[in-house]
Every structure is written in structure tokens, then in C-alpha cells.
Image (cartoon, rainbow, N blue to C red; front, side, top):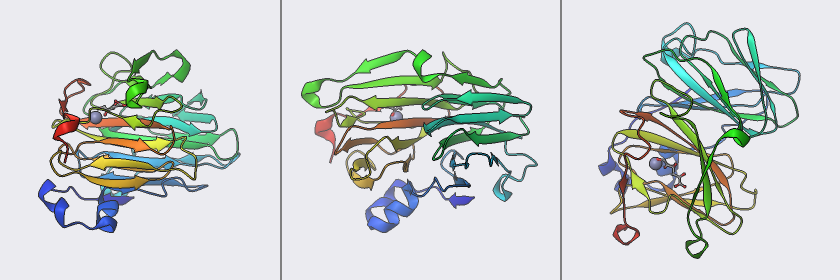
Length: 275
Ligand SMILES: O=C(O)C(=O)C[C@H](O)C(=O)CO
Ligand SMILES: [Zn+2]
């Protein structure tokens, strides 16, 4: 498991492009036949990718950094299928998942196993510390209500689906959903925002290989950008704006952990105040 330390916002100005990417961008999360994990000290979130080959399941193992016998001894986990289809087995129960479906696994589950039903299946993992037990649940993409946001004139028509949240699948602190841009729309999260009480990670997916998302981060008065490929993650500390424009439409999984689960507890930043 890779470890990433927390960053004070004042450090940002001195970071060159490579250093900025090393701290906030997670590349190469999906490697065939492997589970890859990155532990961030920003709210102690873990992002990961499980990419099993058909017929060879992969298990979620505890890592040294957790000092625990099982990965979920003191944590909770959400799993989203970003490519292909398969299943997640939690202890003795197998949950079949299609593309874009989400499974929540609560604290205390001992065995979590990923199986691919087809070549190229990829499971995105997001985990936070947990101080209470909640049951394992599955949210099917098609069954989750879509919130329609944005406008064609501002190139940000998009659908937001909340999977794990205060009024959906219950959790200790984890909140997760998915946003999909309409064809021709490119901007997410406009106006951008910060949320001092939560760290957030965006996993961009369904972006053609020859396209990129230019993701804005940093304090609103001093933004920096990360050029992001398909299936890469940006970690946004609580002080960082997060918003992006693609050279093509795309989807992303947004996931948060921290002080509260209030989706609306944000500090919006007017576009005209961005620098
Ligand atoms: O496009 C959007 O707007 C989003 O998806 C915003 C995210 O849900 C978010 O940043 C939640 O804090
Ligand atoms: Zn946010």
C-alpha cells in the first residue's frame, strides 16, 4: 500500500508539476491481476483498484499501515464497477455487480473477494475509518434516482447519482456517488466548491484514451491544474477546490470522508473569484 502524507495549502506554490502529481494524482491504480491501494493521511481515506482476471479472484488483504488483522476491522468500504462486470463476495455472500453498480461493505466483514465475469473488469475501491457497523448493501446504477444539473449554454449538463449517503445506503462516514456528463458537456462541479469538513476523491472514467480532463485544484485564489487520464484519481484535501473540464464527456466517482455526511455542506466559489 502506498502512503501519501497530508499537505498544507501553503506548500502548493512551491510544487512543480511532477511534485503536484505525486501528491494529489493517483495513476496506475488498475493493474491486471492485482489489488492496488493508496492510503492518504487526508482524512485517512484509502483509494484502490482491484482488477481480477476471469477465473482468478482477488482478495482484499490487510496492509501494514492499518495494524489490523483484516482490512475492515476498523474501516468501511465502497466498491464501484468502472469496467466490465463481476461480483464481490463479502464473507459467505456473493453480490453480482454490473458496470456502474456499487456495493457498500461495513466494518467487521472479514473476507472481501473480487471476481471478474469478463476480461478487463475493474473495481474501484474507496474506504474510510468507521466507528459503527452497517450492513453490506448494493445500489444498482439503474435504480438510483438521478439529479439533473447544469445547462447546455455552460457546457455542464450532467446527472448526479448518490449511492452511499445520509438518505441512501447508510455508513459511518463514507459518502459516495457518480456523476455523468451529457455528450457535448465538459465541465463538472460548476461553480466549484471546497468543503472544510470533508476530503474528496474523484475517479474519472469512461474518458476515451486520447482525451484528458483538466482538473482544477488548490485554494480558490491560487488554483493549479492536473491533467488527468481515464481511470485516474485526484485526491482533494478539504481546503482544495475540485472541478474539471474534459476534452470529451466523461463520468466520475466522487467519494468523501470526514466530519459530516452533509452533501450540501460546501463553500461554493464564484467562477469570477477563481484565480
Ligand atoms: O458535478 C458535480 O457537481 C459533482 O459531481 C460534485 C460532486 O458531487 C462533489 O464534489 C460533492 O462534494
Ligand atoms: Zn465536493
